Length: 104
Image (cartoon, rainbow, N blue to C red):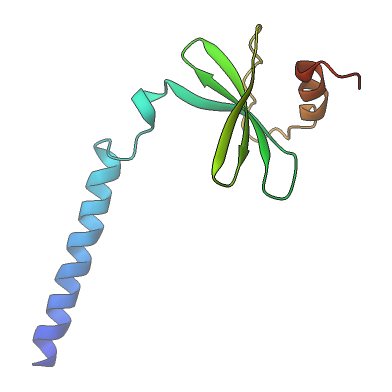
């Protein structure tokens, strides 16, 4: 009786692990339209609010993101360069003030 329970549990776990691996390997976890939408830069502006630059095709949009709400703040006329992985966004406040048209 215990042997059947243990074997059944092992089979269920094996099926879940193989299914998860198959899902990731064959593209079930891909983003929207294979990279047509990506976050270029992000800056926290409050405890739960962020300013985010999103690349949509050839356009870049500055979005205000808060719990339960996303608002378009500005469409950038010249695109920002994409951040490199591992690089800290130390220049984020400067570009944000430049985009919003305020003096630093």
